[in-house]
Image 1 (cartoon, chains in turn red, green):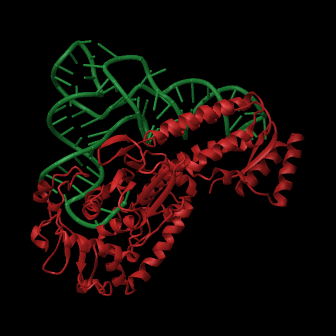
Image 2: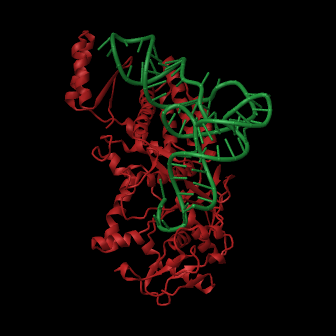
Image 3: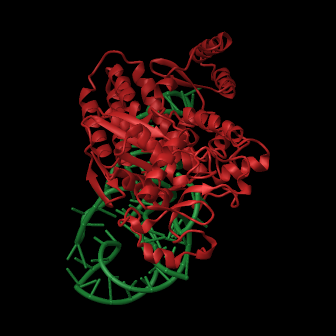
Length: 471
RNA sequence: GGCGAUGUGGCCGAGUGGUUAGGCAACGGUCUGCAAAACCGUCCACAGCAGUUCGAUUCUGCUCGUCGCCUCCA
């Protein structure tokens, strides 16, 4: 299995620190608002990674942090006149609801920044003691990046150039260098009720943003772990700062593989509130929430986010969502058809060939487009075989359930169409009778009537098949 | 403004100095009472402009678009 490692800018063979086990840290949300679909692109990518690692036999320990104290949260909670923990609560709940709707597997740990302040303080004290951190005039504590020789390596940034090119005036800061970053921010009036004052040596204040990930990953995964993920915007400075803090503290290599997902754009432009193209998952699930005025199946959204390779920018379009919906239906139609065939020609050869291709491509830095292509070729091949005669359809369903452990599209659920109302059953029977009597006017009338109720009828040589239409 | 990415047919994408990548969607055909599903077929791209070369999507230069980082951000 190979991954593209941001640290080396190369695709590398994945070797875990401990055979058969993977320690994975994924940067989670800052819970000041509803997460948008760009955020979920990253979380879906991380979920795919996690599921695929498990599929390949690894035992995965995943940590996803929740940033529940930072500048925006403080500002918004004070503006709303509520305690910041009260302010973040509904967004935390919404986040977990959204994860569930997208069928993202729960991580093993969801630490919150506010629960790990002790751990952050321990690291800050150590860095102060080593002379890597310093206290500024206003009482804040900063990390001196010149004490970390490889600073800038992750982003391939030359620090001296960066400082001179920065568009923020250096004299706005209390720190020695524009790139030094806060470990501990001294309290000021704008922080209102948000402060920690039990650490007398640090003074009344709150932790800087970057230190939380260093402290939380250390607390749960240890000083070193295998994979760290996040969006590309985190490469610099956030992840670079994590490396600087953690490695200066422990003296060990922090992370072996850095995997970053590229951003999602909406209709070719950056998503932003001012442009009015800012989309949350909730907007897509609610017909009134988006310009195409319809609700989308969350699994279609998942498939859409999943089907573009994580390393390139994704262009999100409503039209694409409709196309992906059709593509998914093609798979579901195959399964529905195969499910009806219990005995017949073997499909083992197709299953084995497809599985091998799926693994070969997913092993190649999660090359999902090729992996999906192999699966769609499987759909065609199985359909052809079914056209020729009965097959062992159970094997097809079993294989898709296996693959769905990785894709997480809940295809199994789509097959459980559920019992129909009695009067609908009667209408279907009546239609069958009408067709037999060649009363096609009545037959089409019934079909249209049911379609209006969301029931799609298909006449097949084996009899009538029905399914529910998409939302 | 500084630094850095990226641009392949409607969409996702592999890849190469010269031979149709592939998948999805769309459209057409077959089948069907009509549909649906399925199958078959069609769609010959490489941002633009120069240059190198017998030949460039692939190499070089310039231009344009989009994006990222430099301040919080998946």
